[in-house]
Image 1 (tube, helix red, strand yellow):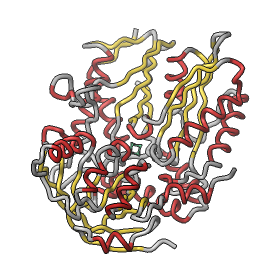
Image 2 (cartoon, each protein chain N blue to C red):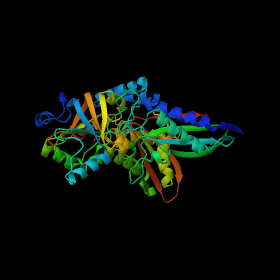
Image 3 (tube, chains in turn orange, cyan):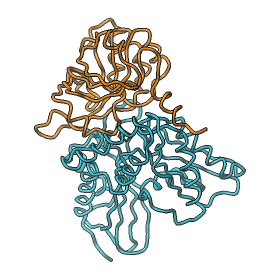
Image 4 (spheres, rainbow over the protein chains, first blue to last red):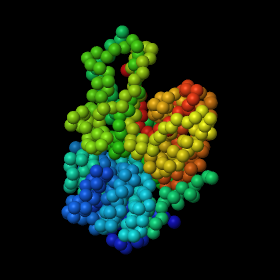
Length: 185
Length: 283
Ligand code: SF4
């Protein structure tokens, strides 16, 4: 049966250990945004042995490219983007301490394996619920790669940001479990 | 010959783009409510509730429904007895698109294919729009518009089958496409299927099929029946809302069929997410 948790970043190994596929989590604290282009740059920095624009230890990365904010708002609409495009970069970041990713859609086996090996989780946020999710983001600040526009790395402060655990640190996958339950063969 | 001012086109296009970004059309909203009623999985039901809530927030606060405000896609029917004065119709649509995306605080999502850089400094904001023109009788201009997101576009596909593949082949192909896509295109979906024509005609037809109102009946009884068969098959996949598992994966299947070469059976599947932002106006 799915459980509900409220967690604050950075995530610890204990936080991750209690989460199971299907659990609903309300996230609070700081999370970082990055999409394809930013992921490539982060991994390049690691390869060159250089410092990243934020600390990966216990961090959560949100795969999102928000709409521009209206005057007075911290951010526009901000729902998740499809995650598989980050699959080739995520295991490297997980090995360096990343504890959570938020996106939508399937991950490949390497990402799932890295979640098990290094204790990390992949959360699904509701794709297309950009208006609703954007409201849970209280501040947003571009901290790197401003020239990438919507793909720049942003530091977000979130309050009760709703996500569902898709891949847990035990190798389970909600997309498989859920589908098998309702598939008519 | 009737004359329409360039500026009038610009304004109309700008307005429908801004409005569509935050207002889910009635047909899509009704289909989502129906899916919410019918859904058997509690998790999918919960997510559908979130999506209906999202639509409510978006329209009442004029916020974009989804951060992927898409590429702007148009099907434009130009009456033979009308002409645009003060500039080209194509330029007016592009100018209206740029204005809409900029003034509506919508995301510009166009980029060069390899550098992945945004073209906004050289060509314009979220430009060029994707425009398909047709010449028809009359003195009006009909503009059908949809914002097409990347998530659902990325799972779309096309193939030219040998004629022997028949209906069975088409059904299998669509099923395979939606099954492989799983959660990625943001279900519940509208599935556009282009059948016949040539390779590109099938693809354009599958796109245009997505502009039809969800819940409307195909005028061709044979295709209407096939839509029903495919819809039933797709909802057996168990994918559910956002892939969480469930009974309501596809809201509607829309087919557009064309005559084709005696040697071929082209088929294209174009997928639209639950955020089916589409509208049309006649000027
Ligand atoms: S597929 Fe549709 S709902 Fe999902 S993120 Fe893209 S535009 Fe938004």
